[in-house]
Image 1 (tube, rainbow, N blue to C red):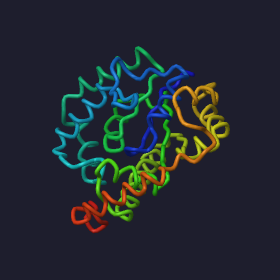
Image 2: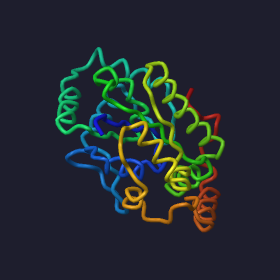
Image 3: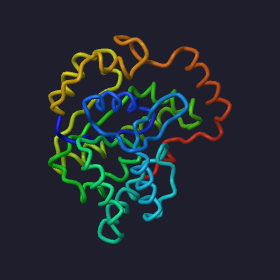
Image 4: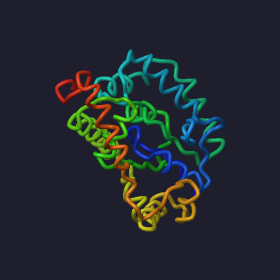
Length: 247
């Protein structure tokens, strides 16, 4: 495998599993990666820091995990011609010294248009990752991101549309992966990944990073659904609804 990989997704989409799988093909995730108590995220901490720096430079103080902001996307993309690019270019050089590398940070849907201007995209392969909307909603509520299902559906759909529009406008080939399909039909999904990335991943590689049963829908359990509904009802007055979605 020779190409670098960039995953575009929102948070809570199963991206750590997908990134861990692809990393087993030899992709470098970074000198230091962000770890949560339960699992490895495979998120390069320097990439995270630079994305947060772009947020600050653009004056974006919103919650990227709950808000879709086309204005922030435009402002961040425009920074390329106005800020000191040397830290960003130096980071790309460090990554290229270890290529193929893989980038996964849920902030990338906001910042990828900036990064594209500095990257050699001919050596990159893009993956757009999505998840079932009900599973996304339950997971977001369990993480105390209180929204209506309608709001969350609008948020997730707009991120996916934005990512695909960016790739198609730039003429960049991409693969759309659905997380549930990866777990339910791993052989087919991995075959598609291998064709897109030029890798030789197997179902055994997926088993090494996914520690639950394959071929079963990775839906949230009934107890999680009940817990999410209780959290939602308790915080109902604080919910975000579609009317509050950024334009």
